[in-house]
Length: 195
Image (tube, rainbow, N blue to C red; front, side, top):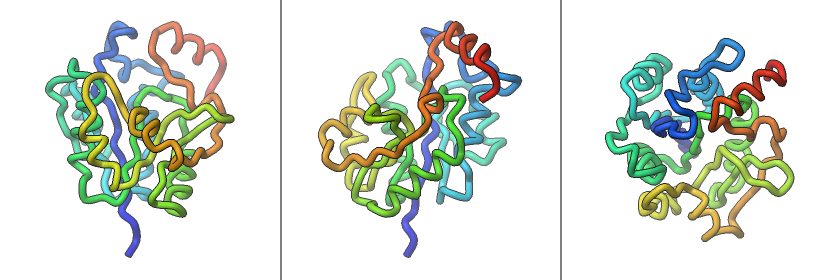
């Protein structure tokens, strides 16, 4: 039987450093949220969940076929988003965690991470440039309990560090791993040309 892979789009952050709704900000005419959803090809996944905190984000994700999970306490930190997404996809064999603020990430790179994990489904597969790990990361079901046990503003990095020998790096262009935390970072990307 084929392995069931789920996708969690983590889109519940408070965008404190950005100073507004970061996911609605646009790069070359397309919102960061739209770009993130484009990277999660529905053909790759048995189920896709968007963990969100804003009604407008929920509406946009639902319109694109994501199952929406509301994080009603985003101030609790990243761990709550990871936990809610993991619980929603607990029946999957693996879950890919996709951040919503890497606007240059491509569907092709996501597909390569999924394909690499399918060859070794007891491992953790992650996009990386050189030896620098980035996102997305795909975790096997055996590690779901540890992901659900995270607390505070901590994500999967804690689990990866505890299982470093299980990590598979999938070489990715450095630009695709660049995240946007501030308006200045977005402006810098915009000035660099179309991704």
